[in-house]
Length: 251
Image (cartoon, rainbow, N blue to C red):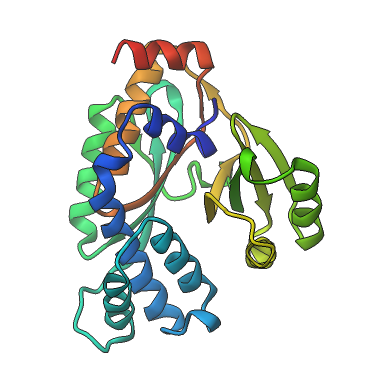
C-alpha cells in the first residue's frame, strides 16, 4: 500500500475524514486565495483556480466562502498574505516526506514541522533531499460503479492521459501536468463523476515498513495532514494490506 494515492483511503478507514472537514475548508480557502492572487479571479482563464473551485464544491463548501476567498486573492477584500513553500525530510523507517505548505509565518511553520518530524524519529532535510523522488502528475479517480473500465480508459487515453489502473473499488488515472486540465475537462464533458481531480506528487520508489514503523509513520502523517499550514503531505511508504489491517486493529 504505497503512500502516494492511499493516504486518503487510510484516513477514510480510520474514520478521520469527516472530523477534519473544517480543516479541509481552511486549506481549500488558502488554495483558492493564492490561485486567484497568482492567476486572477476568473476561473475560465485560471486552471488552478478552476480546479480548486471544483474540489471545494465537491466538498460542499458554501459558494459564499469560495467567492470571499477569490476576492481576497484578487485584492477586492482584505486578507492574509500567504507564501507557498515546500519542506523535505525523513520519517520513521527512512520514509521520504515531502510537504507543500502555505503560510503567513515561515519561521513558525518550519519550527513546528521540524518538531513534528523530530518527535517521530525523523528529521527535516535540505531542499532537494527527497524532492527528486516525487514526480509531479495529474491524478484523477473514478469509482468503478460509475463507469465501464474499457470505455473510461479509452476516453482518458484519447484525452491525453498517461495511464489508468484499477485500485480497490476505483480507477486511478494519471496524466502529465500539462495534460491534466484537458483530461479532466474531457471527462467532465462526458459526465463522468470524478471522485478526485488534482495535481499530486507520485513517488518513483517506495520504502516498505513493518507494523511498528508503519504505525509511527501514519501517526506522523496524521499530524502533518492536520497542520493548518500544510496543504498536502506526501510520503513514499509502502505498507502491505496485512500490516495495514494490523495497525488499524491495534489503534
